[in-house]
Length: 166
Image (cartoon, rainbow, N blue to C red):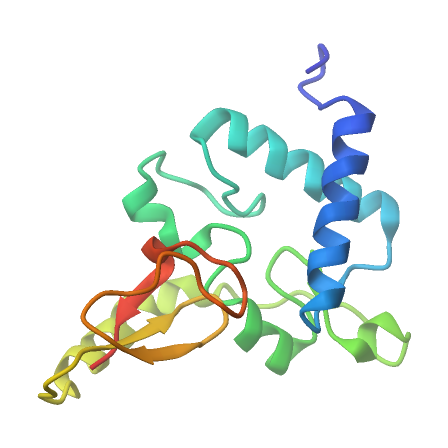
């Protein structure tokens, strides 16, 4: 890290290439503004150094991983934001329309503020099943088993990113 708190350009470039490869191979796209995107990548690396995980660079983190699981990049809100607004909250991920220049990136509302309401609704709507259903909060993958998988077979998120759905 240099005096301004930014990461060495080689480290940013390496992570940028990795994220871009992972995104494209999973049907996602990084923001085509390379300088902007690399600034976000730099912030992810800073947050990983600070907290031990990639907390979203555009959100305030508590420093407690258990309280920040929903905002670890890629965050729980990415897909909904992409579908509704064409970009995730920090604009690291963008839709094909934005990538192709058919839609502009605009400010979007913070979806995290609605989390408590959603969790309350899920608690009211739970059904009783013999086998629990686990949902990956990153990509939506569902599986019926006693415990969530160690790693999501779709998006590679760790088991802590799963929630018991039913």
